[in-house]
Image (cartoon, rainbow, N blue to C red; front, side, top):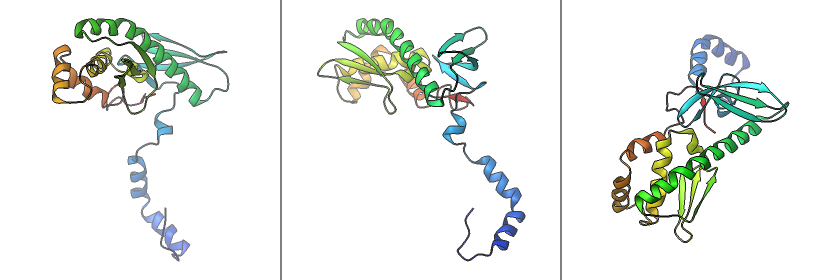
Length: 207
């Protein structure tokens, strides 16, 4: 709390006492900081292919994770004295592996459907883009964070980047071309504008 310069301490303390109910209400309604909302802890949730999994931490000598589809639990083994950033780095590696595996199946399928072929792919951690296309090399890059969203979101981005091999800009013709190959583009775009699990997902952690 701040007060005008020269305000007596007693006046400030009196204001706080008289307005404590209002102050507490404002504090409760304030957004939580990123550190409070995005720590990977026991009982918090992460998403894999659009499905939320509750984290159960298991002490171990090294990082590993197992996703239990029956209990919707992510069994996350963590070494002693690990840090929050190390946990996130491990999960980014997991998401990267998941995305790479999905691309091996989905990319050839949509190359065949569209008749547009890439020269190869890269999986990266990106903050501002879901994918990119190099017209010069015909190489496509994909954001590993796509593995947090439903599989159809990855497929939409695959089609998006493949279509750039024919239409470099986001022109009207580009979207007409996209819509020839994928029917739920707008729904997928809407999902990708929301956090993993949607806006009402509670404590689901975005990596």
